Length: 227
Image (cartoon, rainbow, N blue to C red; front, side, top):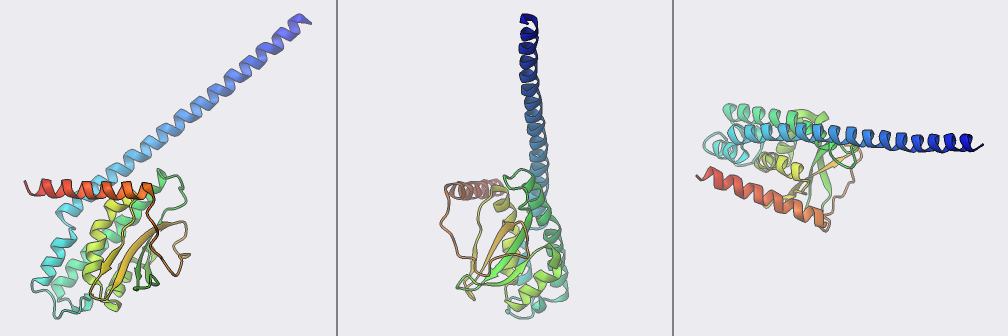
């Protein structure tokens, strides 16, 4: 009886040790996977940031367009001359391809991995959604929005600034003072199910910190460019 009880106690001990070992191995595997996803995200963002700085800078493109590549000041894609349209198409194509990928990589290291779809919205002055863009609408969706709402240069500028805000998890709302329309974005589970009104919410502590990181990164980049 004593021997049987001793063996039973040993088996219990072995079972506990085994369970702890499995849990530890699982935790290590999760941490390794998270590290891999973090590295992939960081690498993708760095490549994107480099490309934006060298080839797809919104401010540079806007200045180029305004310097003789438009027929009028309606701020639409259709107001551009042929060369201007070509430049904008190339610019839009880059962001249409890479922004959804950036969001996907970001989702792998986020608490809610199901939130992996990017939605960019145009709002009126009452925060009502006038237009929403997701990757299914491709480049033509951005062209359509720029024509209908006379928002070509705001859209160009917004796309250029958006990757950094996505990286830091910061909200980003841009007001076009010419017509009082707003640009904003969200990362959601289903791009088809977006609220018809997007009221600006009070910032959380995490969002305030994220915005501070965005401003710090922008200042650092400007200082580096000015050297």
